[in-house]
Image (cartoon, rainbow over all chains, first blue to last red):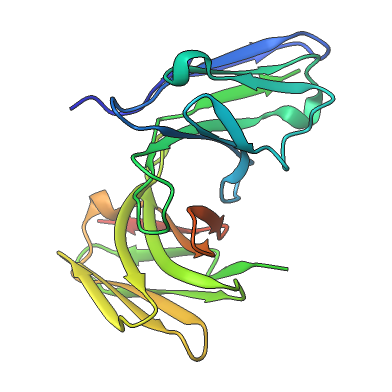
Length: 115
Length: 112
């Protein structure tokens, strides 16, 4: 079974430029998460989707970040414009449900460097 | 504020030795506690998951313990191998739905 797929794996951009990350969750997983992981820290949730609906985006900086999950499968996370402080690893995860016992499976992440 | 704190921040051990990693949490309401292993450049992978009523859970050479009264957990690694070199992250699930609170992790290096 294929795991969570993310692309690109690495991205280097100059500040003020836009950037987008793509995630393809495990087949059949209705719940999708985007996390940001700063160096030496644990991941922090940015947004959680249940099918097409963003059910928790309280931690998403909405002035520059946006996300979409059209058709309830693939998802894209966008930053526009990027700032130096956005340099981090952006992880996508998916799960089959939203109960506390449902396992979240993580992708390899996209490492963003903003110069 | 819901928090998960881990110690030590980093650890170096020799191959074949045992080690124990610590986790303290203040997450409420508590649903379960997981330990994840994160290799460099990879996403976290779950090692164990424990609910309120479970005191210990093993996965091969990894054994996790949970004391829900003191809100402490530990991860014990037996007979360490070079492949155990990774970050180990303690994660607590808040409430009845799948909201995870992550610790900063312990970076373990196993040397030959």
